[in-house]
Image 1 (spheres, rainbow, N blue to C red):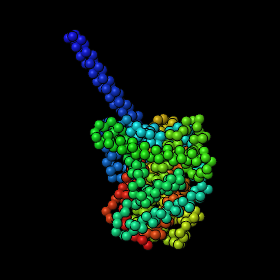
Image 2: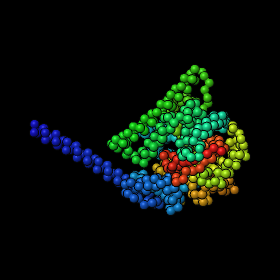
Image 3: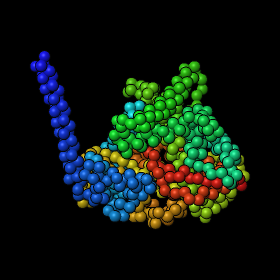
Image 4: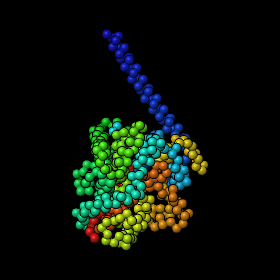
Length: 505
């Protein structure tokens, strides 16, 4: 018995030593790989690492507490020039702001989206989220096929046909704001705009009667916020999935439940639409119908129910987030710059007068408002740049960027925009073609090239419609003391939500 006991003890001891040796070996291998990346990119300038292992992680987190990542990139550009690097654990991010290089990278499909980032959008804490939707699809050939089938839902003729629904939703929004337009209540416009944007995408994209504007108990806004926070946290804290604390476990559960809520809603609306088509009923030619058509055409390529839900969730969330933030930043900046505010109101009076119904042709007449939106998107783009993994070696001046390098293409720099920190919508009234070309590839709020945002014209029309209705009905005044920087939760938003006092005109 004693012999058997000693043998078992020896086996256990040996197993423990093997595990320890394996862990130590893996740790040494990881540290050597980090050192390799330091050597590989040492020829590219960048801020000093605060830690051998974590690199510039501390600096990044501190700056994100103050402003969006774009401000940090701008500061680094002024110090290091058109290209610089950040170290984050074993990853090296190369930031480029040269418009020619940006064009080269974003227009070549061999440079792909980085799997590390976008897989966090495909699944969050093990729960399927965006899956292989248009935003998170990494296979370019599959992306192109799906996009070509969904593109018709965003062409000019289709968008013109949505004007009635846009008018209806905007009018309901105006009526909702009447209840808080006493000039005394603090109103978070980000929450309000997110609600109307979600209502819009639900109605015009999927024929869903969400009633987000009037129902404070609608579960979708909070679910969307939860999954976005979940994705952002996993990007910043990749170890969060295994943190054993009760708080972390509860957060993971909350995120998974929110993802399931949205996907189940998508499943229900898809099944309902499929049943309508089987019965031979007329169905709207909206985003949902085009998703079903894509499934019909790609059924032999694995585009089934889960893939359709991926597309639903992608449009459902993206259609809310970009417009909500754009409108919030617009109201914020109009309040900060009364001269611009007055020009917008003057244009609305001249072009629309007392019209209750705003037509597509009316929207197209709002040229100065469009300049304002472009300037807002220059200063506060939905996503700060576009990231790619280089598919082959790229040479930029004296810098060699090897295949596999993660590159972040950015804009906003003073080499392309005079006084870039100044809010001046008139800058988009280009005086000559040379000025237009100089800034063309430095202005990428919706990205461009093969992976440009499919819904950018939808967002522009929706934003002008809502602003046209609001600014002829209310006057907005900012609540004192709020910050005018941006925070990042996948996309950018006003840090304090654009708090306003609203008065009826």
